Image (cartoon, rainbow, N blue to C red; front, side, top):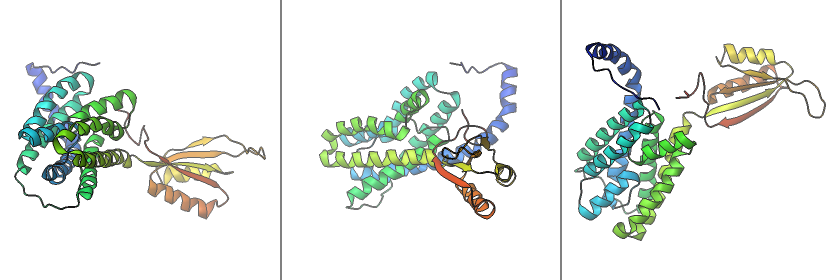
Length: 301
């Protein structure tokens, strides 16, 4: 584990000030994405959870319980719990992640405080409220996680598990939140707790969808007698790399080169059109690639 230490000398401060504009430009897209994701998440909590006395998940779920049972401010509980988790995260996760999470916690706390007095519309369709509210919160949280940050709370724990063991964030968040929502039965009642579980499941699905959807690609395998034109088209027109694999027919034993590449959905359609017009005898296989790591795709870090 690397120690991230700041040089507080005059030279150190000059270096920080010199790098600050570069860092701001590089992180500005993350700032926009995080703010959008957090706004969606907080709206889901304040409009679809609190007015209906439904249990919530994670640290927010604990805060909601304290609000229902003791009248404690949501923003105060969320801020206090996150301070503890961030002290732990500082030793286990990257400095960038910790700094963005600190920003997220401050943003969530302020936004919850601003929204606490807003009279959101009410409805009797509580099942729809649980499903839609869970999806909104999960999607907003997924956007934040995908940007390399988190909304704090138990996201810190699940992201640590993801880094350590490669677990799915939404799925394991649901497991943890089942315990929290189960404990809330004594405060909100069994019916509301069941609706809370439905909302937590909806949230977990939306979270994993938001994290993986933008990274989803098409894995293409093309079996052909003439791979060179296909490789050239992929390189020049689609600006993607490809790999030619030596293969042979299982029945005939004839030499059958196979071109493998990873493309976006649109590029896969373009390649399909190219093959139909130029090599209709080629054999093309298209499958989903949920996550692609490496140059030109998602960073390893």
